[in-house]
Length: 414
Picture 1 (tube, rainbow, N blue to C red):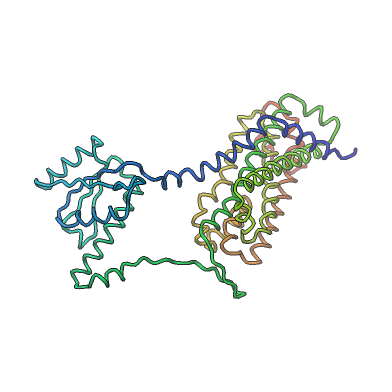
Picture 2: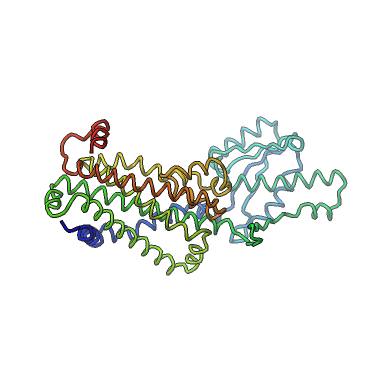
């Protein structure tokens, strides 16, 4: 029988590319992913518009005045009004002042209360009390400013002149330079390197999740409505499976291509960011092998289950493995040659994403590149071969789902 792989692939591609779901996901998916990536930093960096009132219980009797002056110098609203107003609690014993301040904080008349104890110069510890103590932005600003004041005050008491204090208080700026054994030097930018890796990982994640889900849904639907029996009368199970993978892979690649095109059109620097990634020429190999490996897993799962609910339950666990390296992305970026990340790079389900996170900072050794590519290729071939066997038996099975023991016995004997 003549191979029908391309006929099946064409059918899968055209059927899905014309669907409303594809057109909606073309815009909605990158918008959601960009939103998840940028919104947290947007809200953190968003300028405040109203003066924040903070209570102060100051046992030192000197720190609050200096703090107020320093805050007014450093932090102002867009309207040039002070960013912070300090309300000092005086005239009473410590516990009374604390109770009064807490009461106003609970009524939300003030944002919170800073407690400056007499021992602050020796143990450098203060307390911040609020019903919103998680305002890291505010706490970091106060912590940094109070540290500056305490450091300067200690130097004054040690008879250091104002000129010397100013010299010692200058902030340090570090310019990271990447060097190589070939003697090359290159100024690097953390954000550029991180986001170039992050873009690759997110593109792969989106391609696998969207195409993988479509692959599973397509197999389950055709299996439940018996269309698969008609299809198998005109082509082999192998042609059907490979055609589905090829067609939906083409659909996914088309989707990625359009996303990249939209990104470059909207933000031209996106192209520079994308193509300046270190080791950019290795990433497509990991991308393709990784995608085919996950496609084999999804098609194997889809041919075994009878409903979309069952498929979703199982594919969720596979997706979590794919997402796991993103949790480690900051640490992998800071220490790309850490033994943990080297070991995880040899775990095929994580190889593409782990290598992508590491390669933009430090090119792994030639041995690691060759070994991980060979391992990924061998895993992909093995899973494709296994998925083909499962697909042949699973696609025509209805009713009770095969147990793992029955599946293992079948794979051993066929």
